[in-house]
Amino acid sequence: MKLKTTAEHLVYLLGQHGVEYLFLNPGTDTAPVQEAVYALAEAGLPAPTVLPSTFESVSLAAAHAYYKMTGRPQAVFVHVDAGTQNLGAQVHNVLRDRAGVIVIAGKTPYGEEAGSAGGRDTMIQWQQDVPDQPGVVRGYAKWIQEITRPEMLDRAIGRAVQVASSAPAGLAYLTVSRDVLMDPPRLDQSRVAGYAVPTPAAPDPAAVTRIAAALAAATTPVLITSRAGRTADGFAAVEALADLAGLPVTGRLEGGPVNISSRHPASLPGRADGAAAIAAADVLLIVESDVPWIPATVTLRDDVQVFHVDPDPAKASMPLWSFPVDHAVQADGPVALAAIAAELGRIADADPAVAQHLADRVAALRSRPVAPPQQAGSGPITPHAVMGALNEVIDPEDIVVEEAVTNSGIVYEALERTRPGTLAGPAAPGLGFGLGGSLGVKLARPDRRVIAITGDGSFLFGVPTSALMMAADWGTPFLAVILNNGGYRASRLPVYDLFPDGVSSQRGTAVGTRFSNAPDYPALAAACHAHGERVTKADDLVPALRRAVAAVDAGQAAVVECVIEQN
Ligand SMILES: Cc1ncc(C[n+]2csc(CCOP(=O)(O)OP(=O)(O)O)c2C)c(N)n1
Ligand SMILES: [Mg+2]
Image (cartoon, rainbow, N blue to C red):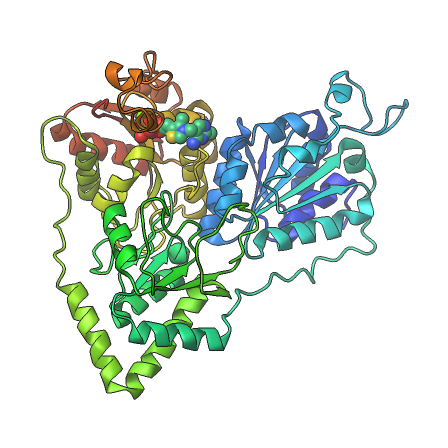
């Protein structure tokens, strides 16, 4: 194998470590990498597919979403400190959603003498030399490394993939200067094998027995989970335990996965229903939920037993985290849930009284009234009407990327999502995930239709010009449904809450929260090669969405602006 530069070795190694996509925002620092991509192709050597990006936060959201769908970290190459800064709030989302991604940033060259290969040759290379480039992501990255010598490369890339993928998964940040990328590669001791990613942790058997026994004896147990449904196995385990134990399931996270079918009798998607069930619970089983309830609004029973299962139950990345926990178990949520269900099944098999008790709880859950699916209806458009129209137009297997902010609750209550893996939001509040996230989902699941449901503010945070351009470039069309309420409702309501008699309440508005010069969204879509629609009446939702879906199915991105109440 003939590799001429460390850059060629780097790109080659990424592929050898299972990285399928390299999202690239090039700059002066990436010249050796750009040449490497063509050189490897010319030599017929395998390498990741390079996807050109025109905004870094969009590529990071795509890599984040790709990890959510596949469990495989991808690489985002950004330009020195400036490109790292443009990753923006998406580094927060990666941390909080435990997404494995590798960010590689160029570092300004060290060499400045004449003839230094890759050394400094423009003024900006002094300007790019900042005291602490990794400091930009230090509060969010799981692991940081600079590749200072060609012989480090194997270890750096192997470790980056290993660390990014290990639970809790996260951001691995590598920097490498252009002169190191130009160095001859060190292939003599190259090793790809031996960077095993730990398998998901199984729970301590004694803890499983204790939790199963508590569930067997409980009267009003509740399962709180925000992300156990992140895998198909986890989704199955949640439903199996709910079916066996008559266990209501709450704790859904805005932008989180489908943990339980919206048609399942144990599903409690409403915040108020969830809070009431938690307050009445004698046993709380928290599985992979960072914020199981809001302490200011829920008072637990004095005799409640709280079990907490998480790959990282100490949550050291959250300085203030003081939810009361009686028994903490370090384990993968889906694995633990399956083990708990199996153990509870054994207890019930051995004790008819327990079996009867569980059957009674299941019967009580099944007797709860389940509302019929939401429909579009007619009249002015409400967020409920949009969900009703989507219920009619989209397929159960379509994947919805949710970033609906103040309408997020309505998405979970009114949009039917019955299958695992059909919801994929950021699961964290750094706005701007929706569009890039949809690109990543579509890359990972080219056979599925992808639908982003975003607020108008979130749509703009998603850098739509870049994201729609990238959808056309990458061949990853998606539908963006904008819930246009004329601005930032989420930033207005807290002003009214804190100052019910304040000036803002009296004026019926709050500074900085209404868009008076919003773009013409269908025109914006058209300018970016996408199909665009504006809908103002509920009756028109279904036909407009059908036209948009047809465009997406034919390979074009689409934007449907739904004009809803500006309250
Ligand atoms: C990157 C980023 N900037 C600012 C915020 C603060 N913020 C939270 S919600 C919100 C408004 C979102 O507007 P929109 O998507 O239209 O949803 P709406 O509130 O109208 O439902 C803002 C600005 C944030 N979460 N993330
Ligand atoms: Mg809005």
